[in-house]
Image 1: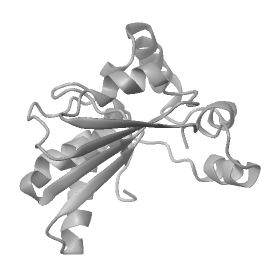
Image 2 (image 1 turned 90 degrees about the vertical axis):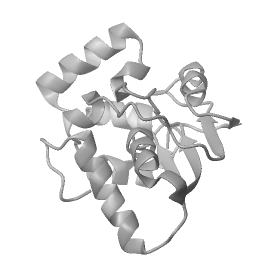
Image 3 (image 1 turned 45 degrees about the horizontal axis):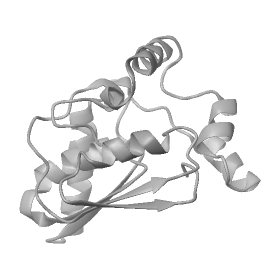
Image 4 (image 1 turned 180 degrees about the horizontal axis):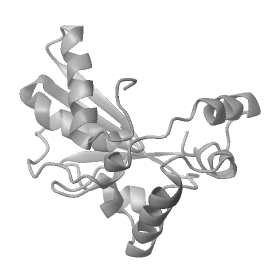
Length: 175
């Protein structure tokens, strides 16, 4: 997504992913969406239609059709996140990346995540998804039981946004 900038929309992210998929020249796809990648993955799934043969969400946020990433969170958290985005952008402070996203991974990997963490466009978090339902295909949602940023109860609720979903849980943090 290197061509995207701070003004990019969710649709820009999705179209960029679709261009990358089309360049592969492969007829059938399984999408794996992690974290906020679940939003892009779910929109990409809608555009792939019958080319999609499976969807895997890994502690992914998959909004209901017509909703945004932020809609998955409780009201108070949504309001706080919007305020933070307005004041500081979408890159969390280093301490939050280390304690939340990187909980349970090795120090050298944590250092790399902190160093390479890229601020995304606010609209990736706030744009509503299309109202088109996700295509029917086998779905797997992998919950991470030690996730400090996306609680297991929230992941379970989000997983049910996929039809005919199989839910598995791994003893892991967010990454």
